[in-house]
Length: 69
Length: 147
Image (tube, rainbow over the protein chains, first blue to last red):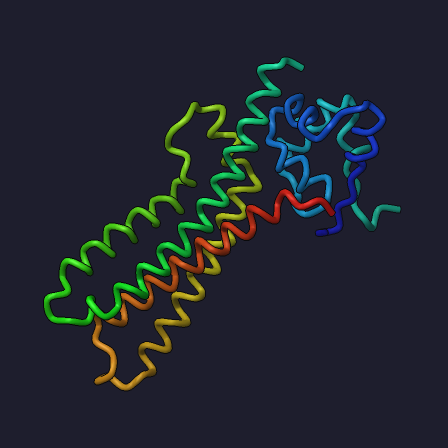
């Protein structure tokens, strides 16, 4: 959706985190994690950075434009 | 991560789901009341029915504007009214507004004698609020769906 790919599910699974765990770590709602992870919702910069910090990964490794080479 | 943080996320999740269901229920209640009110509303002494409907419409409007989370602590409110909820509400208000315009256009297009200004206003507001609530509830409930 909107040309944005994300690797949240993959990184979350690697760290054995549930959506609720990640939501608590990132200080967002579980609904936010679910919709962003499924590509239903494109997050704001703040939410993207919160998720990146919670997953301990640079934001550009989590989110990528679909036309990115 | 702290247990407290996990608890508030779970609580916000539960409250937001419950709110979505209540908004859906509210849509049908409001729609039902508007339809059932119709025969009484059209009579000359229908001012009581109209006032009751107006109060209900105002409550529904406040629910849409505030997100229905005036109570509860700030953190819980912030989690319930997250970016996704705000986006859903914006879409619902937009859809409701479009429906309102469409119903208003139909009311204008109908012959003058068949629809008074009061009746037209009643139809336009009732339909607009009903569609707004229903769209919002549907979008919110869809947000939890796993793809």
